[in-house]
Length: 205
Image 1 (cartoon, rainbow, N blue to C red):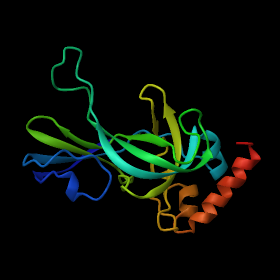
Image 2: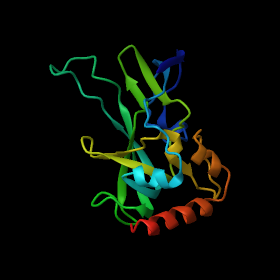
Image 3: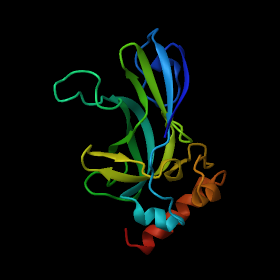
């Protein structure tokens, strides 16, 4: 589902936006804000179901955001096939469920892909944002339930906001609307980490 939110002449400058969405360098082109709601996997009913369904679970610190260009058509002409997206470069703080060899230990660098960001389509810029799932913030730490995309060779967040928990302040922040996310929103981060550690030990990972 897509919804055009606004059209206007807006400055596009990465340095002025504190969140971790990839924006094009400064421009005076008009910007079309395109909010979309992807077809996500069904929300797991319990935290254990989320852990079991994830390829990997980890605490990650977001270091930077980079543009992943959309491919051109087979003849190299415009329009390109789809929109540019954003890849987040992150450092592993703690591994809760590993996925060898791509996510195995603290200190490792990993990439997480999201279908948001700026695309210059010629006459204007399309800025894609995901409904109910804000961009990751550079410098913040998140507990993420991840899925490995073999084609892109990147991790993704298949359940959207229900698989993303900002624990930077020590208090959980999530925009997920499912029962699991709502049960942890506003609670101490240590509560979530303690329960995940118990699940990890139960399943021998």
